[in-house]
Amino acid sequence: MSSAPEQPKPDDRHFDQLATRFAEKIYGGAKGAIRLAVLQADLREALPPRPLRVLDIGGGLGHMSLWLAEQGHQVTFSEPAAPMLEGARERFAAAGQNATFIQAPWQELPGQLQEPFDLVLCHAVLEWLAEPYSIFPVLRQLTTAEGWLSLAFYNKDALIYRNLLKGHFRKLREHSFAGEKQSLTPQQPLDPRELATQLAVHWTVESQSGVRVFHDYMPRDFQEKTASNNLAELIEMELAYRRHPSFAGLGRYLHWICRPC
Image 1 (cartoon, rainbow, N blue to C red):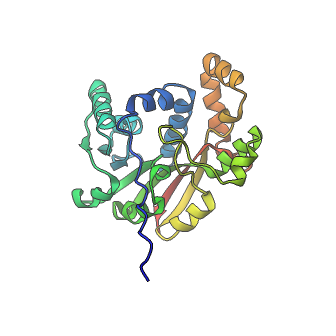
Image 2 (image 1 turned 30 degrees about the vertical axis):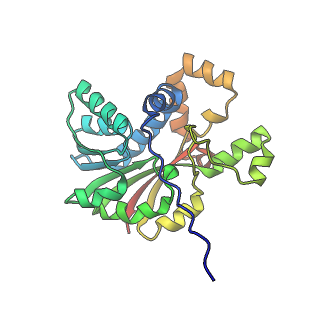
Image 3 (image 1 turned 30 degrees about the horizontal axis):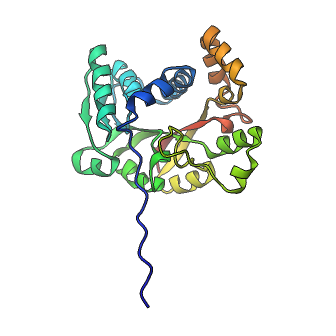
């Protein structure tokens, strides 16, 4: 008996045509400011006060990498999308900072990099991958035995809660969580419990923070008013509650800092 033809696997999502829109939407307002503030605060707490060799996988437009370079770290920046990579180059040049830039998907990095890194960033990458957990062995291979992994991912729990608040019960019944093809909504939110199980083979999670634990649930007019009039206080409150036992898990993204097992 002949078997049915094998269906093609979905591809990882890259941002060749959406780089400018991505920059404006994600980093041009309060959402991006909160995200950067939380990631930076967590890394300040976790990292030692010495220069590190840093690898940023899927680094987008280089906001986090540039901040780390400005702290004195030696940065290698990888990004598969040419427009995003060029945007990062321009950002570094404008700031007078240097980095090694590599245009490559994560699958090609082990063949291009000779030594592991003290710190590997993987921020907002998993949710765009066809098979998110397949990256974990590569992340481990690229990190030194005494190094750190900074992992930020789109939180399925937060998406479910947001749909509950909006009364989108049909979407929940149908488990319809993926964004539209040309949307900037990630194609695959991650279940934190399943992710933790997969991660535990290679990593121990040392700290967990929620990114935007309340901002995205505020009514739109409150969001706009607070962001316009009091962005500093908004960020202060997000930082204060990012690890609250009741609120951290509601973060639109979660940020985990991990050490190798």
